Length: 139
Image (cartoon, rainbow, N blue to C red; front, side, top):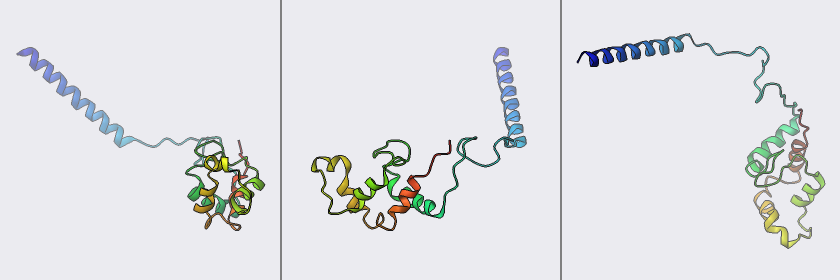
Protein backbone atom coordinates (compact mmCIF):
# COMPACT_ATOMS: atom_id res chain seq x y z
CA UNK A 1 0.00 0.00 0.00
CA UNK A 2 2.85 2.40 0.84
CA UNK A 3 4.53 1.59 -2.50
CA UNK A 4 1.42 2.53 -4.43
CA UNK A 5 1.11 5.83 -2.50
CA UNK A 6 4.74 6.70 -3.25
CA UNK A 7 4.34 5.93 -6.96
CA UNK A 8 1.08 7.92 -7.10
CA UNK A 9 2.61 10.89 -5.24
CA UNK A 10 5.69 10.86 -7.48
CA UNK A 11 3.51 10.66 -10.66
CA UNK A 12 1.26 13.53 -9.59
CA UNK A 13 4.26 15.68 -8.63
CA UNK A 14 5.91 14.98 -11.97
CA UNK A 15 2.74 15.85 -13.92
CA UNK A 16 2.27 19.12 -12.01
CA UNK A 17 5.91 20.05 -12.60
CA UNK A 18 5.63 19.19 -16.31
CA UNK A 19 2.44 21.27 -16.74
CA UNK A 20 4.15 24.20 -14.97
CA UNK A 21 7.14 24.04 -17.32
CA UNK A 22 4.85 23.90 -20.36
CA UNK A 23 2.85 26.94 -19.21
CA UNK A 24 6.07 28.84 -18.49
CA UNK A 25 7.39 28.08 -22.00
CA UNK A 26 4.12 29.17 -23.59
CA UNK A 27 4.02 32.43 -21.62
CA UNK A 28 7.64 33.39 -22.31
CA UNK A 29 7.80 32.24 -25.96
CA UNK A 30 9.09 34.83 -28.42
CA UNK A 31 9.33 34.00 -32.12
CA UNK A 32 12.90 33.79 -33.30
CA UNK A 33 13.93 36.28 -35.95
CA UNK A 34 16.82 35.60 -38.25
CA UNK A 35 19.21 38.51 -38.74
CA UNK A 36 20.24 37.15 -42.13
CA UNK A 37 16.74 36.87 -43.62
CA UNK A 38 14.77 40.10 -43.34
CA UNK A 39 12.26 39.58 -46.17
CA UNK A 40 9.91 36.61 -46.30
CA UNK A 41 11.05 34.34 -49.11
CA UNK A 42 10.38 30.62 -49.56
CA UNK A 43 13.96 29.64 -48.88
CA UNK A 44 16.30 32.08 -47.26
CA UNK A 45 18.98 33.13 -49.68
CA UNK A 46 16.92 32.79 -52.85
CA UNK A 47 15.24 35.87 -54.24
CA UNK A 48 12.60 35.91 -56.89
CA UNK A 49 13.10 38.41 -59.70
CA UNK A 50 10.79 41.41 -59.75
CA UNK A 51 7.98 40.85 -62.25
CA UNK A 52 6.72 43.48 -64.66
CA UNK A 53 3.02 44.31 -64.93
CA UNK A 54 2.64 42.05 -67.98
CA UNK A 55 4.41 39.21 -66.20
CA UNK A 56 2.16 39.63 -63.13
CA UNK A 57 -0.93 39.47 -65.36
CA UNK A 58 0.54 36.41 -67.08
CA UNK A 59 1.21 34.83 -63.68
CA UNK A 60 -2.45 35.31 -62.69
CA UNK A 61 -3.63 33.71 -65.93
CA UNK A 62 -1.08 30.88 -65.58
CA UNK A 63 -2.00 30.16 -61.95
CA UNK A 64 -5.74 30.17 -62.60
CA UNK A 65 -5.70 28.11 -65.82
CA UNK A 66 -2.41 26.29 -66.38
CA UNK A 67 -0.86 25.58 -62.97
CA UNK A 68 -3.10 22.59 -62.27
CA UNK A 69 -1.30 20.60 -64.96
CA UNK A 70 1.88 22.56 -65.75
CA UNK A 71 4.75 23.83 -63.63
CA UNK A 72 7.39 26.28 -64.78
CA UNK A 73 10.44 24.15 -64.04
CA UNK A 74 9.21 20.60 -63.50
CA UNK A 75 7.23 18.09 -65.50
CA UNK A 76 3.83 17.52 -63.97
CA UNK A 77 0.76 16.21 -65.77
CA UNK A 78 1.90 18.47 -68.59
CA UNK A 79 5.42 19.51 -69.54
CA UNK A 80 7.42 22.29 -67.86
CA UNK A 81 6.69 25.58 -69.58
CA UNK A 82 9.67 27.80 -68.73
CA UNK A 83 11.82 26.47 -71.56
CA UNK A 84 9.01 26.15 -74.12
CA UNK A 85 9.62 27.93 -77.40
CA UNK A 86 7.08 30.76 -77.67
CA UNK A 87 6.50 30.23 -81.41
CA UNK A 88 5.62 26.60 -80.85
CA UNK A 89 3.24 27.57 -78.04
CA UNK A 90 1.51 30.22 -80.17
CA UNK A 91 1.07 27.82 -83.11
CA UNK A 92 -0.10 25.05 -80.83
CA UNK A 93 -2.72 27.10 -78.96
CA UNK A 94 -3.92 29.69 -81.47
CA UNK A 95 -3.66 28.41 -85.04
CA UNK A 96 -6.96 26.69 -85.76
CA UNK A 97 -6.15 25.64 -89.34
CA UNK A 98 -2.85 24.02 -88.47
CA UNK A 99 -2.61 20.40 -89.47
CA UNK A 100 -2.51 18.28 -86.35
CA UNK A 101 -0.91 14.86 -86.14
CA UNK A 102 -3.90 12.73 -85.12
CA UNK A 103 -1.68 10.23 -83.31
CA UNK A 104 -0.61 12.91 -80.84
CA UNK A 105 -4.00 14.43 -80.01
CA UNK A 106 -4.53 12.24 -76.96
CA UNK A 107 -0.92 12.62 -75.86
CA UNK A 108 -0.78 16.39 -76.20
CA UNK A 109 -4.41 17.26 -75.45
CA UNK A 110 -4.56 19.81 -78.27
CA UNK A 111 -8.32 19.76 -78.70
CA UNK A 112 -8.82 19.93 -74.95
CA UNK A 113 -6.64 23.03 -74.60
CA UNK A 114 -8.19 24.77 -77.59
CA UNK A 115 -11.75 24.14 -76.46
CA UNK A 116 -11.36 24.65 -72.69
CA UNK A 117 -9.18 27.75 -72.74
CA UNK A 118 -10.29 29.50 -75.94
CA UNK A 119 -11.91 32.36 -73.97
CA UNK A 120 -8.95 32.95 -71.64
CA UNK A 121 -5.87 31.97 -73.62
CA UNK A 122 -6.37 34.09 -76.74
CA UNK A 123 -4.33 36.48 -78.90
CA UNK A 124 -4.48 39.11 -76.16
CA UNK A 125 -3.58 36.97 -73.14
CA UNK A 126 -1.19 34.40 -74.57
CA UNK A 127 1.71 36.90 -74.86
CA UNK A 128 1.25 37.69 -71.15
CA UNK A 129 1.50 34.01 -70.25
CA UNK A 130 4.54 33.57 -72.51
CA UNK A 131 6.16 36.62 -70.91
CA UNK A 132 5.62 35.12 -67.45
CA UNK A 133 6.84 31.67 -68.51
CA UNK A 134 10.01 33.16 -69.98
CA UNK A 135 11.17 34.86 -66.76
CA UNK A 136 14.67 33.84 -65.78
CA UNK A 137 15.34 32.00 -62.56
CA UNK A 138 17.46 34.09 -60.22
CA UNK A 139 19.33 31.17 -58.66
